Image (cartoon, rainbow, N blue to C red; front, top):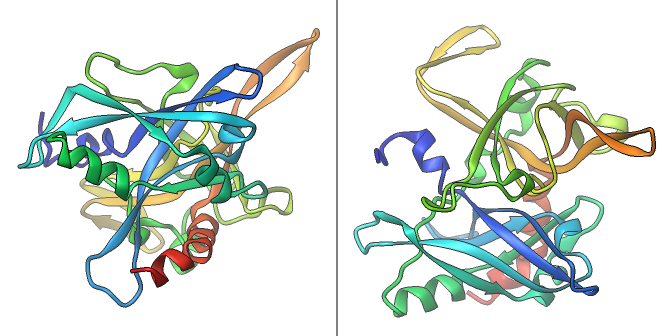
Length: 264
């Protein structure tokens, strides 16, 4: 495993999540790691797990599967733990309109490290969020990837998600139907809810004025819905997914986590 490769590191940005509902039904989805910077500090952040509000809504219990690693930061993909997430805390840090839920996981990381099983992960960073001029200068058609667990599928033996590809079906900078969302043309299925959607370029990529050389990762948003229509009384997947924009998610997190900043 080449951990210097950016795409390999992306495998460790997500985790599967299972939520038991009030009717005892269990649903699965995707959550991802996000490092929320602490204002007024250098290189300090609150590590979060982020998923969709609809995944945890009406839940009584939530579990995420996390990969352990060594002290020198090498993953042990076949050694994992099921971490219990505080469902009430997830609900308290959720926003139905944005379909987002988050939970600080510092206590989980510390407890696991104290037991000699540090969690191995790679958190997405705010500087990756596409916003402002970067967002507005994107082409209306961009190639994207998203990472997660469609229909609960994953490489269970090696504890890795599936990386899928697609294109923007509506411009990422447009508010689809007046909401902070856009659509992607991709194979989005239940279980992909909560998957981060990114632009990922290695080597070179097209920009407004030509071609840039280097690597680029932009966090565009989070999958919130797979688009369907009813045909002969059955749901038919359209190969489209709705994505809530990352800039709105980050702004919400900064506001709702303010009291945590004050405690540090």
